[in-house]
Length: 262
Length: 303
Image (cartoon, rainbow over all chains, first blue to last red; front, side, top):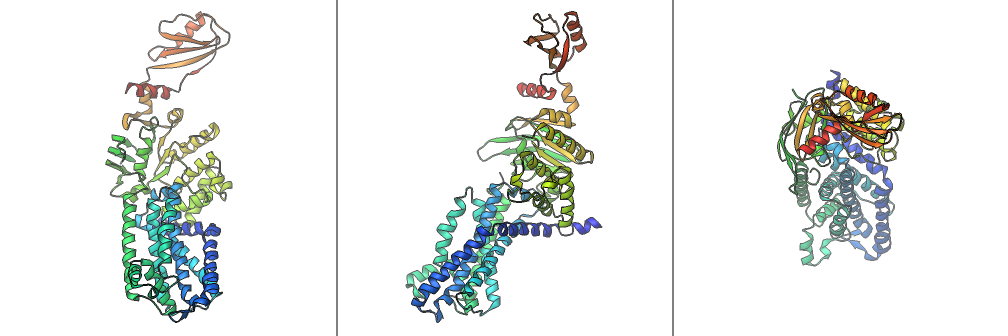
């Protein structure tokens, strides 16, 4: 009877352990994980908001600082969700302690959920810290709490999954820096963080709608300001499809043991 | 039911290297089993497949009746593995490493903490429980991997060269610990380069070479196959002239040390009679090589 209680939900215990291990990892090294995005996002607020912003004037009826604040918060959430999973999973492969999980009776889907939850936790924590920093520079609106929370969760899930795929394929430290530097950052900067795509020529507007980050930034901005360049329903649909595809790819790679098992 | 049943297991790596060639192996419950072989023979490949760290090309593996493909999680629950290379996070403490491993096996934190204390104490690591693993010595890291492998109290413990690079005293204490675990009913499968270790600990043995099992029998039967042994004799006084011997091959190493090859069908008493007749006084004698080592080399040379 005692054993039955102890082993009641072993899968949930395993999931909980992976999540706690992940959270412990990034909070232990907070100087590398929490502090740098806080400092760099503060600089964005100072430079683009306080110094350049007043010269730009309003954007879609909002003060420039007010307009870019949601984009900067989303940028922190995206890069930290992604960065957490890619560095943690690659680190586990590099130090071989991924084997601790692989030899245990844990379904692959639980391993994936555990790592993604770790990425979501860091994304949200950094997002909260950056939001607090933003309050020192501007007032923040909240148009819809539910849309804001939903978009934060879905975005961090999507980029945690993307980070997981990068971590699976990475074989050296360069591999975990290339995608964030040459793919993720340009997509974030061109995803409407600092401007409305209405400002772009028609050709570049059409190119911009191929950028998935545009939908996330705009949906988040809608949650906060009630204003968006694109349809919110469309943004959520794109995000769900994006998550589904990344989830299936991640699970497939894990089931196949790609770059994890010989 | 066998603790481990391996049937027609083959592993071919992407570079076409055939690490395992249709091997068959059975390990009984409660056994202390040695899997021996030279470097690159296929020992670690076999262990990796059993523990789901490597994909097999063909064949089947059952752990306590659970097929590793069909009932992977049930099979994994029965196994505790101590790998050859250190494979824990260098930034976690000893206690975190053991307790987390318990969590991965679905053991609640309270019980995992109790067991972590039990095994860390048994392996003399309790005082180091809050130490980051990177600060441990090599021997401590090896013991930590054993504690981690036991936290879910597996039915079978697989150890891949557990005493590599460990000093003699610590190796002996690890042997005692493993004997104790085995007496409690845990099946142990061991790979080692120290053949003395296998001879001292294991009841049954398989020798693998170039991905094939070249011998699989009990330690007793295997050692009985030894045709000859070489002994070293330390003499009390220097001797210049060696006695002539019909049944023994004798060589002088230096003036006070001789080496004699003894065929197992000959009686060693006969040798001492010759020594007495020749006025040779023996201070001590020892095997030139461990008996299993002798046999191991002969077997691999024959194949």
